[in-house]
Length: 121
Image (cartoon, helix red, strand yellow):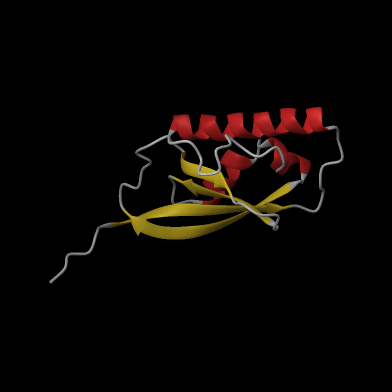
């Protein structure tokens, strides 16, 4: 009989386009995007965020985050200072998620698109 992996409890975040799209210069938008990415990197370095990344295509769904917490309230608190969320350009949807226990990122490989990040939220 196949042994099933031990399961862990996480929070899955989906970033979607918000009701307040940015109306700013490209330079200001790039600065805001850099601040957004710095915020996410900080959360990952602190161990609160397992992985994050953008979704390709021009849809309302913009990105995915997996938090190392069981608490949706905790994940919401971690994202309350995200520049795009504060501005209303991105909205965060959070759900409890079960996956293999000990979920972690083992590589910092470059994105498949060859870009570090998109310039739009």
